[in-house]
Image (cartoon, rainbow, N blue to C red):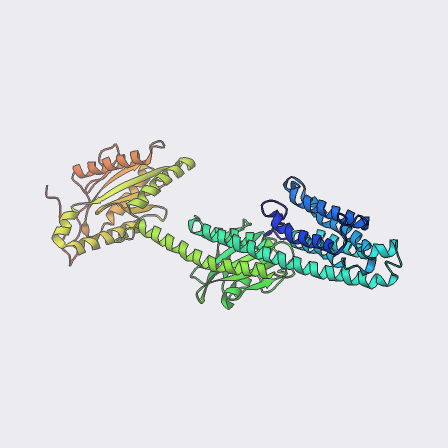
Length: 514
């Protein structure tokens, strides 16, 4: 039995009668050809015993509370029927009895609904039904030459039962695989991490303990974007510069199975040793005619061969992975667009409102300082009115680019309105924040000035209170003549910027009309 299939419960209602009916009908039809005890009192008592036993077995099939009993006892009614067949053969002339084919009924039943062990037991009982009378009763009903019949019936039942059981197991596994894939496919669109879901699904469908998804990074490498069953660091494979089954599968656009990856020159040996893999399978992720990734499946024990079911399931998840990757990337782009200002390329107000509470929580956990700054370009409406909106848009883009260059990678600069910007300064107290903002202020292009309000988090206030203090400092800078930076709760930090040099061909920016 594989992890994908469970033993059927044919005797668990509903549907038990439907499953038992064909076998019960064949067992009862056999009595139509012999004198029944009810009509012929002089008939062989063994027929009476056999009929009573058959009826009892049918009743036990239908009315026993099998759900409350251990699974091991559910084969007993089928195995007990061999005794009925032995009685009927003996009552019908022994070795020449026409009832011999009835031994196949329990064999077929257990092939359909039993385990392999129970099927083996039924084949053993077939041999017993034919061989025991030769040894116990002997001639004339059971001549010594009947050993050939014993061999033929035993082999035939083994072949028939084994074939039926393999077909049934295969059908169950395929049905279980299809059901599992359908369930997983339904879950993928709502999964917060579709790539991780694909790796988890591959492990579930294949029975392998480890799986990963690798994708090109655009720089000549395959990098792991999701893993299941392992805590290995991010894997990077250099395409064309080192042996790798994943790289080979992606380049050839064909799956590859490695029964033993130990010291295999075609596999990244260091990685498979690190995850204690013994066998591996690599399935390219196809998007149309292009390979966009590779799924790696790893077993810690030796797998001599890969079953068709596992290969088909992983291939199917490869196609689903392509759809999941495309969908995830699209959602990521849409989310990025939704949080990005289309003119400057900076994060927008939505991103600012989500990032600032997160950064405050992070600073609280780490015990680190945090400061923010609110920035307004001075008299930007007049600038637009004088030079036109295209010139105003250029000013915004140039200012955003110049300010971003003066900030660290960890800092966040966002455009929160028309001429309004905001900055998160990580691990900056008031003094450090002032230095950074002064550099940024000095980089404002074309001699344009801006008013800035700085507030440092007091280790207790929430993001709304912190923003309100920075906003109050910003308006203080505007009231004090603009072109200034003010600290929340203090007087002026810096004087008005020095006069800018002319920037031809554009005229000098508009100054205050106050």
